[in-house]
Every structure is written in C-alpha cells, then in structure tokens.
Image (cartoon, rainbow, N blue to C red; front, top):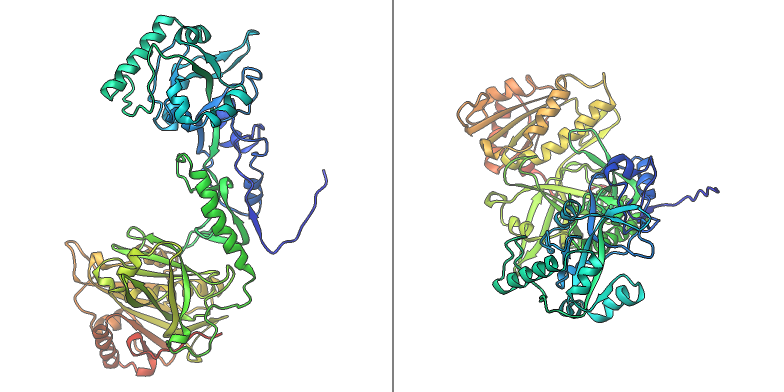
Length: 584
C-alpha cells in the first residue's frame, strides 16, 4: 500500500460512520460486539476510517456504543445472506404497510420508534432459513395493500418492486399466506382484526392509533417483502463543538475541551449530535447544518487579522462596533449558578484572538422587537482563546434589558460588539503588569454579577502559577465575594476547585446579606475588617485591589480600602474606569 503525505492548512473529515465495520479489532467489535452478526444498510466505505484518523491526532470520541438498527432492511431472495441490505424506507410503514411474523400475526405498532420495532422483530419473528439449511437474521413480512402502495407512490415503489425485485405480488390473502407459509385462517383473522382497529381508531394489541391506509380480508393485489433489522446509523464518533471544530479532552478547572487547530468534522463521522437514538431524517439535516457550519468556519482559518479588535484606542463610538455571530448559548445553572447563561460568539477567524487584555470588558448590542438593546460584559474566555469570545450573563430581570435580546437570540444571530475599557492586566512571563507597573499580589472584591471579570483573572492567574511554580508569592490572589443570597452566587464549584488545587496561592471568602440556615461564612456587608482578614494587609506598593459590582458597592469598597491604608493608585474600580480599547 502506498502512503501519501499531504501537508494542509486545514482538514475537514466527512468520511461517514462505521456501520459496515466487521473486522475483529474494528470499532463495532470494540463497542458493540453484539451487533456484529447484523446486516447493514451502509456501504463498504463505512469502516470508521475517519473516526480512527481523528483519534490518532487526539480527538475525543464519544457515544461509540450508540448504534441505530433500522427495523426494515430488504432481504433480497436472490442474495439473502449479503450483509449489505437495501433500506426499506420508513415511508413504507408510514404509508400503511403492516408487519406480520411467519405465523401470520401482527406483533408491533408499525409506526413506533425504530428501536421498538427492531426489538419486536427480534423477539417475535423467526430467523431466515434457505433450502440448504443456512440461517440468517430475524425477519418480518411487510404487506402493502393497493391503498398503501398508492400512498407511498407507484413511481417510487417501482424502484423496489420492479427494478430491484424486492417485493412479491400476491393477488389475495390466500396467496400471501402460501408465500409466508402460515395458516390462511390465522392471516385472515389478523387482517380482520386490523381492519376492525381501523374502524374504531385503536389497536388493542399494539396500541396503534394512526392507520394511514385500509386493508381487509377482501383486499386484492397485495405486495409482500421480507424485512430485517439492519445496522443503519452510528450516533457516536468524533466530538465537535458548535463550530464543527474537533475537540480534544482537556483536564482543567475552566473548561473540559480544547479544539484541535485546523481540524473540522461533519456528518456521521461525528458523535453526540443525535443522543442515544437518531430521529428519522435527521442525518440529512445534520449533514446540511453542520456541514455548512464546519465548511464556513474552516474557510475563515486564513483570516489575515490576528486580532478581532485591532485598534489601539477604542472609544465605543459607532465606527468601532463590529458584527459578531452567535455560536451557542448554554444554560449554566448547574455549572455557574442559578439563572445564568454562557453566550459564545465566533471571532472572524477560527484561529483569531480577541485582542483584549485580562479584565477588559466589551459592549454588546442588538435589536429585539424594533428596540436597540445594549449591555456590558466581561469575557470569561481568555484573550488567547482561539476563534471564540464568551460572556456570562443572567437570564432573569437582574440581567437588565439586554437579557431580552439574549433570551430570544439563536445560533447564527448577528449582534454588534465593541472593545471597551477595563482593568487591562497583562501576564508576561514571570511578571504581572498593570499600567506598566509590576504587581506582586492581587486582591479581588466582587459584588453580585461583578464576579464575572474576576473569573477571567482567576483563570489567568491559575495558568500563571502553573507556568511559574516556585516563583509566585504565597496567597498572591485573594477574593472577597459578596452577594445578596445564596442563589445569587455563581462559579462556586469552580472557585472551590481552584482553591483546592492551589491552596498556597488562591483563597476566597464569601459574604451574604441574606444567608440561608446553616450558613457558616460571612454575613452582612463587606467591612474594613474583612479586607484586613481576607485580602492583603498591610498593603504594599506592589499590591493591586480590583473592585467590580454595582456602583454603590464599588464606592463603599473604595472608602473601606482608603480607611485601611490603600491609596487610589493601588486599586482599580470598574465603575471609574475610562473606556479604553483593546491593544493590537
């Protein structure tokens, strides 16, 4: 075999699933060995090569045990043991085709879920046997009346019946019983029972309540086919994000995945899109939706601008608002706190950076019901994260008017974004710089939703500690987090994990104005003694206090800092900051 190495700036994998993989060490054997004996509707190409290719470069594979059996693959009597079957489409049963076993009895609601119909065929139907005694898969007989044939469409039916010779014509139920090999009286009784169910609108045997077409013991010109459960779709594969970027598992506090640069995937080669069992027709939808998303996103990889916000001084005027496409909205009640959403936007290029500094905030605006709404947010993604910028917001009344816009937005929606002012902290090597001054220790005071910019600082500081172990001062990052009630707290699990992993470098203290029963931490407003006990005291010249929260909160904290000896040059208050843009 000749191996060709092609160097590419990007790769988009769209090689399909592994539904035809029958090797002893293949994906099907590894994850669903119980299905190796089943036929498949997939072509011989579906070996999972693309899945394995992604795996070799570090892609996370998910849901590989989720394999869908389609209940009706045609058995071609000219080649009954061929492992690849032609699909008997859902529309055959949806047009009124009924299923009976070799005894001539119905056993399932033909319109039930694929998984239910498949299970019923395996449990109630015989295995296929030929005259030489060879044994094949479990199969059912599909019977279509003239009315159901007409509903399905004679031109489409002609392909299966006349061209592929997969249906057998029977002039009446007598011939049908002879073909099946069952007792004619039993089959007539089955059809009569079904006809009676049509009249009353309900089948007591199977629970069926929708009857697309009539059939009765007097029906003529029937057609009959043998159908068997077949491997049809593999729900598992390469994990991708909503931009079609292939994901690699990451162990960390602030995220569990990172994209593999320049690698995209779409279609059945991916996993996680359909859950445990794909709905009929959704594979084509997936190919169109995610194929387009992955293709469009891959095309941005050559974006010439390194940063989305390039200007050295952005003042928030109209000329500096740029369009941003919404990538995804995640409900983060469990992860970050009640009534929270994480909203992520695509940067122009898949490998582009925002150009923002740590602690710099953005303006976001858009139209909702003819009204322009605007809000300001601190990104929770890092400045060096590629291709994406994410914010955390509330989805209740406390989030402000912009909440209406974010609650009605959908992936693909376009809003406008602008780099504003903020802290603009820089981590360079072993140094932390603020306004070109070296900072040794940082104290954070957050009130309510003012926790958002602090999370970005905590994230950056955690990376700083990892990269400079042994060179970072003890308790160099300290946080006081004040909120009205426990339900207003966000990021608590994350903060606990960071403190647990970096106990010598990070600590935090929480105060609630209205604590629940059993609360063991601080109660009431943040006072001067809290600053002395839980931040840096006495203050040094290379200490920095960062304050973020409602204006009245920030004003009170500045007064408290002054009382314990801090100078205005030693604190940064977001409500006092000038609107300064991102550096290029």
